[in-house]
Length: 619
Image (cartoon, rainbow, N blue to C red; front, side):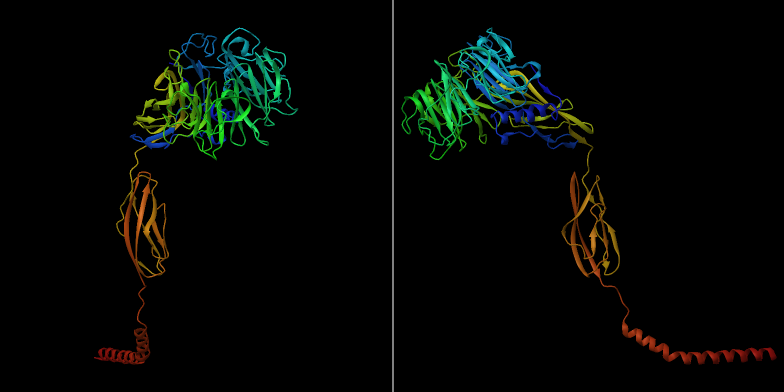
């Protein structure tokens, strides 16, 4: 079993996801809105007893797919490249794993020097494969004369293309088949007819300007059968070369309205299809469905508006991909439309046979809620990359061979069928598997096992599948200290069952006490405290000086991470007791009235005592 581990998602996977996705956006494979955010496990803490349901990012996502009649290549969001072949494929090493025998299930393909692939090139007719690396260079393998490394010998492993006429210091920023665009704005080609006016070349040569105006650079390039090559310039026009035409030549506009700029071009049978900025598609070549509203075949030597088919009036096409006799398009209504020669189910609507002028594909295996984010096409097969990071395909699916189709079978598929995708296999907490694992290509969920207090690493392990067939390739990402076990936490219980009454103008301080694990937060859950009093949320002390008499009912809540408790209280605030004012005046008046009499009585008594004492001495 082959494994792939990212030990630190904030470092290793940052390069593989964030940096790689920036390159994918720059290459036009993804939109900026599709950029993923690497999330930490949620929640990131729980009790030592276990039982916490934890959700983390799903496994790797497939972000690009390429195919010809006998080979399939996929690129994942963490920079992994996989390839496989039908039972009649890989004769020149097109898979790229060092073999030249059929590889019916995906094998991993690596670039030299740890370079990460960021874009797959459209294959050039089952001969060779190329990718753009994150080092700004192109790597090729397969049929020697079209690899571009200066040798005519087949290469079963990726090798860098030769320097050729590419100036030193120039970085390559895009790749299509056997052409690459330099950051100097020059298009370089190699292989049977690179477009330099001199014929085949084993090394990159600068494509001759031909009719392309000075300052116009390549926006898209397509290779079709019969040695036909198509270029979309930054001026929004189409140029072609092939056969006896050795340099880019301006293509007449045909049905393309004046002022409409062409955005991209894809292969068609002995021709091409082009997407205009007016949201419509124009094609030329043999057997193109070209008459608007009429499901008939006709040859077209100039760009001709395609038939309306099932595409609703007012819907614009935002992306397209094409092969030999198949075209797949994405509408701004979120619907995928496809068709062409339907002998192999190109329409994707569950039918086989006849000519289908752009039918709306059926849901097939695509889950409800999963949106198409990109469309791709092989020589005969069509693909949708879903927002769940899985590939769904339809077409012959290697049905003329003995195996090696995009879903691991050799069965014709006439509706979207699940192809390559990753499935979560386990979630480990400090090496111990969680329980009740569930997940898909978007996320994985598992329940924590029991563990001692403290932080632990969380590891998510996934496996690559093609359809329902498991491969030998696993994928894992580690979240260091991704989950923290905490000691058992007791919920609060309020133990103060009542509070004393208060008096207006007199200080008041009473504590609402609660048992349980700290920290505990106290709040007035309902009702109101007597005016002038406040509740301390940390200590639970009700304090202050009441300013208003009355009966006040309120409920205090005590809360911690384990739960909460409430207690209702009634506090009566009364006015202070003051002596009666009339009694005080009477008493005061009494003092004034009786003190002279009392003094006289005291003098008489004193005299009597003195007389009695004198008589006792003389007797």
